[in-house]
Image 1 (cartoon, rainbow, N blue to C red):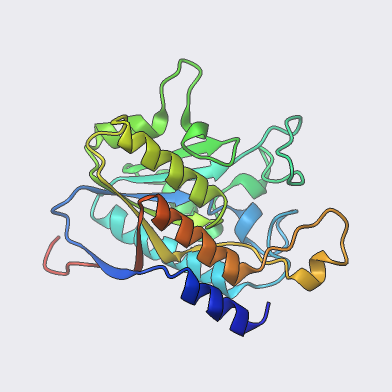
Image 2 (cartoon, rainbow, N blue to C red):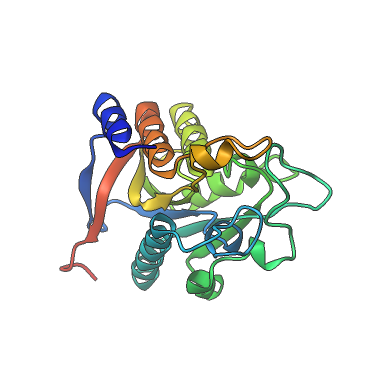
Length: 244
């Protein structure tokens, strides 16, 4: 897609973003959405990038940076890992992130999270992590995490901006509005901490049953939809250096 077209769409569908300073005075939890090999590591699977991808690499780097600080401060972290049973397809997508394969594991730069006491990991078998947190007894692991840590704001990063991140954000906002997530108040999406995949229209035209998915445009639309549903979208995240 030509840059002029993207610029025009951004002009017509603006996403106002401000920097975020985290001070610790408001209990904030970090939510990582599907920062797994199957979506982020080159050549790792059907939905992994075929070649190095700047937007995805930046998302991983920012996810690692934030996770390090949150863990150093002992702040709560919740990580979703896309994990599917081989006999249960997720249409319209090809098989991906099958349970027991390395595709469904955190990227190497984040695997240390598995040993952190303030981190909760949730393997999910659907696009929407909120729904994927429902247990057989009807309880919800994500809701329990928010309430047990008395979280008032969540900072969301991960992949894909317009799919798994967006679905999770929208459902979480609806649950918050229904008072299912008290004391949660704010859902914050970090634009440079999110990414999506790229299928240029030229490629889609030459492949059967493939829908075009221009990366920069769909990333912007994901942010736009999140903000339209009530999320805050931020351009950068920093921490108060005066606090421990």
